[in-house]
Amino acid sequence: MLRFLVADDHAVTRRGIKEILLESYPTSEIITVSSAEALMKEVSIGKWDVVISDINMPGRSGLEIISILKKEYPEIPVLILTMHSENEYALRVIKSGGAGYLSKDDAIDEELIKAINLIIQGRKYITPSIAEMLANEVSHDYGKKLHEALSDREFEVFKLIAQGKSTSIIANQLSLSVNTIGTFRRRILEKLHMSSNSEIVAYAIHNNLI
Image (tube, rainbow, N blue to C red; front, side, top):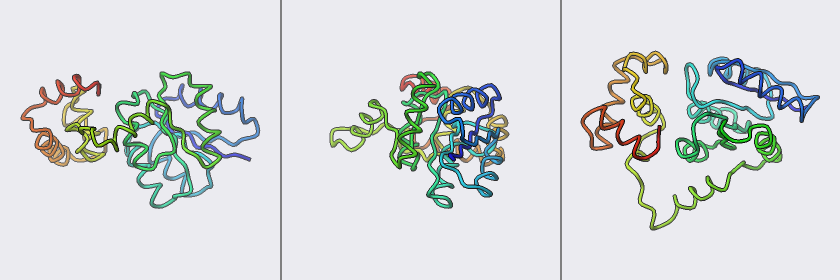
């Protein structure tokens, strides 16, 4: 019997994913949770064939979850299912050890099952566009963009700043202190050679990151 752990902070999304999974795997066990903390608790007490997680949830992000699971539970594959486009997070997810990346804008039912079928076979789900990005990554002619120098956490803070969120809101969303977010912001500005949040917003828009 297959066991799936689904993590998303939207109840409608969790219910929809569960229904899709039950159609193709009627005998499977599916547990849904709404936060990264609940996800990590379930992982620690049970065996899972696939973890399906959003990238943005209360507490830890999907990228941080992948990093932790690869260290502590390397046998558990993680499929990221998110509203964010491939251009935003896909490369980071795959390079961090994720088993696949799927945007909710795609045909979720068909693509989700296709991805899971590959993952339970021990393979990765790589779309043609992600494969192209990976190929460009190793190309000698490929010029890296400034934001690619950001760490996963820095990139997460960068995205939230670009969305116009205040330091206090970001701190609350990521369960970090305001001072810590301020430190991340300074590092981001330094790495991107910028001096203000407005420049971050303009850069993110220009590079299709929001």
